[in-house]
Image 1 (cartoon, one colour):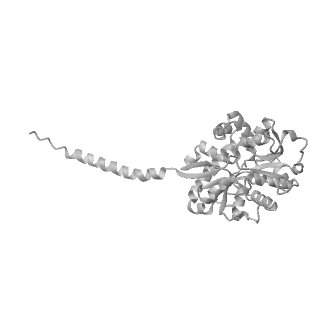
Image 2 (cartoon, helix red, strand yellow):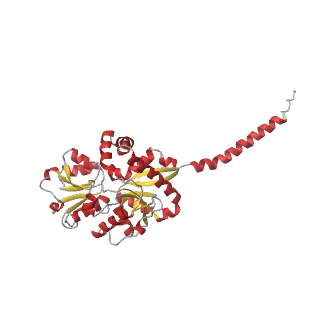
Image 3 (cartoon, helix red, strand yellow):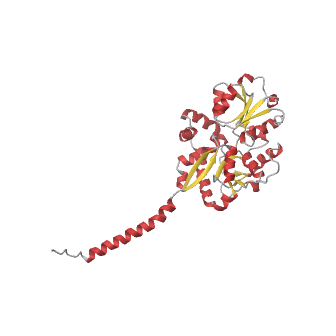
Length: 344
């Protein structure tokens, strides 16, 4: 039987070295890949274009990916988003200042960590057939006003406007609370004349106006509206988390705010057309209607990204004054400025 010649010792050495290198590469590859995996962050939010805009932009432009963050957007609603943050089902919540303040006063350890929309996004609408009969807020006395459930942003803002207009929302009007945030529900209520007025947001406002169903009695987006109805500039829409999350996930939260900051800067610096083109899929609108919305909301974004202490103080003062907040909440207790920075 013919015996095979033994392989060249030099070639075996080369093969052995190659195997060792390959194995070492595999061992090193595991921790490198694990560290490169994006960190999942659950973001609870509400169906509000103004609130979600910078986050949508950050997702679409890849800013979260650049920071190694995988944002999981979960669409709920103001009170439900608040409850999900309280239970730990989400890491951060995109809600309005009054919703977060109401939670804080009830003992929930919420902290405002980002603020980027500096105008109220709501309007008090009246049915078109009542235009001329209802000329001011006090004319709504005894009438039906639809709002979301107590504790929601539109409810809090609407009640503040009624109070400023001379009405006690607890006795002078009949508030009809709607728990379904779907625009068709609200539009149908106006069409069926089940209420004389309502506190609405986009895109409900545009649909009501375009179809001739309702007209704004008070549009809080208009220049000067914040000073007229709230006595000063307001802090409207924000990002909240909990003290526990800040303690345990400080670095991740910093990345989330950094990406959102970049999204905000894109929205405030790009043209309306570019912003609308980018955000139309998330708005679930065609580009023409997305452009109309973007044009109407962009002015509410502050040129600087950060938390304005004076705006927060004014908001908290307003809601304390009408009784929605039962105690004074210092800004230092309410907000954590380390992520987004402090503005006057």
